Image (cartoon, rainbow, N blue to C red; front, side):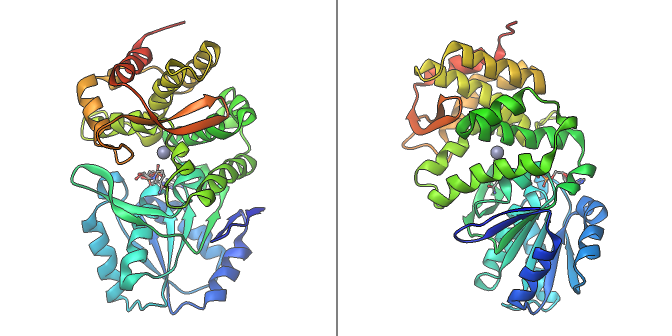
Length: 351
Ligand SMILES: NC(=O)c1ccc[n+]([C@@H]2O[C@H](COP(=O)([O-])OP(=O)(O)OC[C@H]3O[C@@H](n4cnc5c(N)ncnc54)[C@H](O)[C@@H]3O)[C@@H](O)[C@H]2O)c1
Ligand SMILES: [Zn+2]
């Protein structure tokens, strides 16, 4: 059992009684639990075993393709139908899709009801559940509609990872690696050489949350330092978006793994990191995720997608880059030739 106290909300790890106490403390008129078919099957019973409260279930279908405004309409309608008022509480039990969409529905229903995040994927436990970013995809763009609204609290239960499919474990692991690269060299060194099956997650998730929490607390509105969390994500998001509707889409973390290799190259190309560090990053990530050159094509379209990235300014390419392993900087303007070179760097088979 561990916890992290924050200025706006607390994060509890593997503590069921804290969840019970948090719910009782606000005396909600009703408690709603948002699930998808997988979290209903694998995660809901543990919640019932530990909190003896009457709850109403709201179900949505799983998957990124359902992270839409239509699904929100279903959630809002269900809340209304089940008599939710402004004192209702939402528990979002699921991965990043449930957390982002459920948080958005709660933040907008009757101008906002409180919500609690109970992330059940590794990605959501170390990343998506923290920082209050909520929203849905729209018009072919990820997370285009949304707002920043902090949860009442976050409850992480690492036992939930036991039923998570391997590819989703690996996808979430990319965010752990990223936290090491941008803020904790030791964490990078340990995790990048480890075997996912033998890790003890309570401690690892805790360390990673400390990093994300420290960064988001300093800059909740993403005006400055919070942008370092986007390392690997400018190229990663372009690759993820381009292949999203193909027959071989990538999971978020798989795309971010490619993005981190390419953006490590940019960090090297602007004179920040050494060639040794660059190859340490490249080889470690490719060992864990494999080498998939087809995804960094076609460069022209990927560059176009990067131009429309929310983080860019006046059509310039701006990146969050490593200053060294364990330190990062943000808003670094990078020439388009370098970006193209970074895709080529990923593509080459070396060693
Ligand atoms: N808000 C943020 O700051 C933030 C940060 C990163 C990512 N995200 C968002 O998170 C989303 C991706 O999250 P994700 O990877 O968790 O995807 P997801 O929510 O789609 O979950 C992945 C799959 O695992 C299933 N699942 C969840 N928990 C399970 C469990 N314990 N056992 C078995 N199956 C389980 C789900 O039903 C789903 O099929 C994206 O939409 C992304 O934009 C948000
Ligand atoms: Zn991410």
